[in-house]
Length: 396
Image (cartoon, rainbow, N blue to C red; front, side):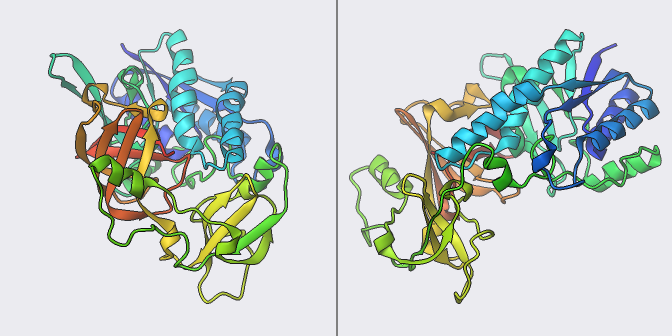
C-alpha cells in the first residue's frame, strides 16, 4: 500500500483531498504546517492558526488517519518572510504564495514526508498532474490546469520541478469547488462550509503595512500625479534594426521625475506600494481614482495616474533574467535565439493572454500580443501550452 502525507490546512480542499486518497486505498497521514508565531500583524480572529489546526485534527479523526503538527516557522521566516522584506526594500512586489509552495510545501514539507516513509505528498490544490514520454523516451511530469476554471491554481505551482512533481498528488484537480463542498458535506467533514483563506500562505490575513514595518521603517515622501502624456515611449512609429532591439524598447519601463507632474499628497514609504495599487493613497479631488504607475524607492517617490486606462499602467513586453527563469518542463526549454508562441498570465486569475517567448543570452522576453496592465517587478509570469504550464519566471 502506497503511503501519502497530506498537508491538512484546516480548509475544505485539503480535507476532501485526504478523504479521496483514503477511498482510493492509500495509507494517509495528515500533517498540519505551523508557519507563523506572530499574531500581532494578523487581522483579529480572521484566520487564527489554532482554529485551523483544530479543524485539521477533527478532519483527521473523522477520517481515522494519523495526524500531527509540524512547526516550520524557522524555515518560513528564512525562506519566505526575509525574502519578502528584501524584495519590498528593492521596490519589487513578491508573491509569497508561489514561494511558499516551492520552498515550504514541496521542499521542506516534502522532505519531512519522505522521512516518514511516504511515497507522495498531496495538497488540496485545484490543478492536475499528467505524465508523458519525451523525445528520448523518458517519463516527464506535466503540471496541468485544474478542471474548475474559477479555481485553477496551477499559477501558484509555477515554480515546481520535475522531482517535486514526481512525488506529488492533486486529488481534487478534476473537481469543481461546489463538488468538493458537496463531498465534504456528504461525509460530515467539519470544514464543509468553511470560507476559503485569503491571507499569506498559512499565516492568515495580514495587515501588509504592519507586517512590512517590522523591518522596513516608515519614511515620508511625496505622491506625484503624472498626466497621461508624460514618460511615454519617445518614438511614435518606431523602426528597429532587429527583433531584439524592438523587444528591448517595449520592455523598457517609462521613467518619471517629479517635474513630470504635480505633488498631490504624501505617503509613508514607497516600498509599501505596488504598481496598479489604488488603496492607501488617500488622495481625493481627482476626476478619476489615482493608481500607482511607478514607485521610486531610492528617492521615496510614488508616481500615480488617473484612471485604469492611464498609459503609464501598460506595457507590452517584460523580461526574465536567466537566474530567475524556471522551466517546469526543462525538456522544452528554449535555447538562445529560439522563440515559442504561448498563453501567459502575470497574476493569479488573470485570463490567459497570447504571447511569444524569445530567448536571448542572459534571459527571456515575454512579448504579449496586447499591452498588459500593471506588469510588476517581483511578481511571476507563467506560460502555458494548452492546459499545461510549461515554465515561469520573476519579472525583472
